[in-house]
Each structure stands twice: as C-alpha cells, then as structure tokens.
Length: 150
Image 1: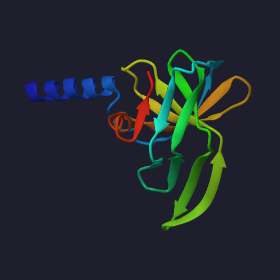
Image 2 (image 1 turned 60 degrees about the vertical axis):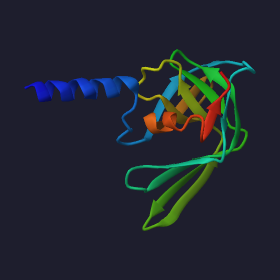
Image 3 (image 1 turned 60 degrees about the horizontal axis):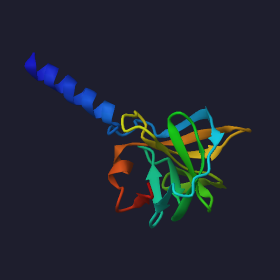
C-alpha cells in the first residue's frame, strides 16, 4: 500500500513538473495568440535540434540561430526561427516526404505545464498551431543545446 502511494506521488510530481516525455509528440493544437514584440526575449538554438517520434516515422528539425519573440497567449511565448523548420516522414529508413515551413519554438510561461515547449507553425490569422510537443528532455538541454535571454 505504501509502495503504491509513493509511486503515485512520484508520478504526480513528474507530471506536474512537465518532465514526462510526450507519448506521441506529433500534434495539431490550434491556439489563439496575440502579437508580442520584446527584443529582450529570444531563444538561441546552438547547433540545430532534431526530434523523432517514438517509432521514428516522423521527425522535425529546428535550425540553429536566434529565435525572436513574435506572439504569446496565456500559456506560451512563441519564438520564430529566421529559417524554416524541416519536417520529414520516414518508412523503412528512407525519407518518404520532406517539407520546410515557417515556424518556431513555443515555451511555456509557467514551470508547471504538461507540455513545457513545442514546435509551431503559423495558422490562419491570429492563431499558431503546435505541431510537435517537447517535454522535459528539451528543458534539460537548456544551457547546452539552447539558451534563452530572459
């Protein structure tokens, strides 16, 4: 009984901290945003970052460079890459589809968020579409693979 309770507490803490990796990082979550411009807020991707889904049939690449704040909503800041994001589909180890799209990285404003970061592309009008969930492993790379100015 104590063991089960302890496991539940640990799981609740991990979920609350946003450290569990997403079971399926590929998503399509449309969010209403407002423009935001603050030159003191940016993120820098040092060498580029590549992420795959669990069965390695889909991948996304965030190119290196400085990502500038372009929008926000109640939960996230949206940082636009100056170069397109790269999307790949794979089958049998071969690329079956390749696309490049404008977009960037969204980072949660609060530390207690189930999805602490993600990749996004612009939607229609005043929306952004989260297309890739990034978990605690992304946050753990801060200071090595990426940095933020604030």
